[in-house]
Image (cartoon, rainbow, N blue to C red):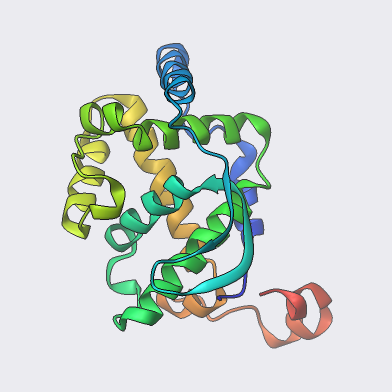
Length: 209
């Protein structure tokens, strides 16, 4: 599998301020969703070691994202990253799973407050009732097409509801940093990588994946 928490330090630097900035109303709403999901048995535990349906496997163990969260990002990443993903099916699937692994590794470095907000956001999107009513996504995420995922993201991006706008920002920021922050994708963002003198002088660059 792709080298793991490549540049997850970049994700951890995003923890300095709240992702969602939900306000009192948004916090209460997300809290209610979380409680409902737990009571209904829809909230899951971290996925641990995950093997994709395609047979692509990894030694990485998920410590935050649940199985449902992995399916969520598996549906959203093609819409968020678009043509940046490889076109060949196996390479594409591997790039998606590697990006999800780095999202998980980055979130594990966040403080408890942001982890709690993100858990509530993911529960909102994974819980069937709120996925339909708030996200307006009828299929489960495993069945969502890139076009449907893109339409969902557009609705939240242009919504007048701050909670939905901030949810869009959180999802896309996590995804873009985890994807474009990996050395294999630096060229797509125009970043040539650290200069040779830096990699030679700083051992951490030599060990970074």
